[in-house]
Image (tube, rainbow, N blue to C red; front, top):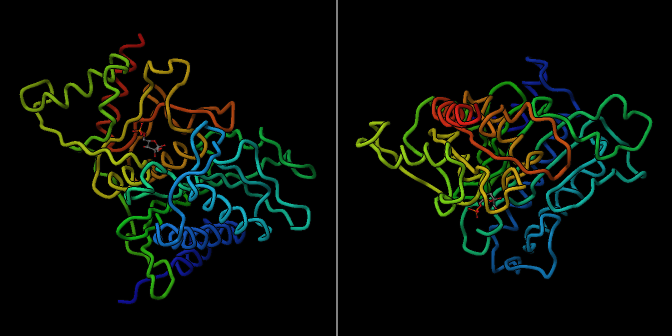
Length: 338
Ligand code: P6P
């Protein structure tokens, strides 16, 4: 049977579930096209002169890779003219990016981590683009968008997704009607629907965490991971396997595909920071995808999608994936808090 393309899927969603307004459909198609361009640059690697770092640092204080900046530019240029956006925000830019006055403005806000997992770029390990879509608040009509208009809890997202640049280039997307996956057909240049309904198994034996930080974790986090390491000789009476790719997109894609729990918790290396990962354009979009696929996402004590943001680049502790494991580690944190 002929597989559907992204465009066909989006048209059907617009027509049937009325889950998709025309401008949101255009936004998703434009972002997906930008991800194709990024995939093309990424796949050239050294041949494209795009590897290595720049002298600059981003707002996170991280050395910028050439591909970080290239990917950011691709997404900005692709989305400026379409008339579907009011403004954009990116991990690579300190302030929000307004749509230039020469272009019409729309009602959506687009946030993205243009190339997540940058430390893996130069060693040819999977990386990805993460994006989140919000609606501009009604109060913003008639005036310029400001940063506070972006500070909405993740449950208000109207769409979220990621592209993963791995052995296959895939686009994984939710518009609130479950989670679907598309594989890039490079010969046709089109996104082809290959995963119609991604569901995360409620149980798992696979955990993803950077074990080198174990001595810095809070006690409930240490308790949960130690029990996993104890396997059948311990409390869980179950053996676990471990994966850590250090690209959130790749680790999350694995658990969305076959189950797992991904954790980047608070640790005492920088005790004033709630975690390493960013709420608005990493944790929120991934949490929407995980919940839409039947999983769970918390910061250890609260649902990530209910967190009220206070700053565009604020960080958060992240535990997400198979529901029963996330519920357990969250309960350990809640028990420790009482
Ligand atoms: P660490 C990549 O830099 C990233 O933001 C996520 O994609 C990834 O999960 C995490 O950081 C890896 O962090 O400390 O293990 O290098």
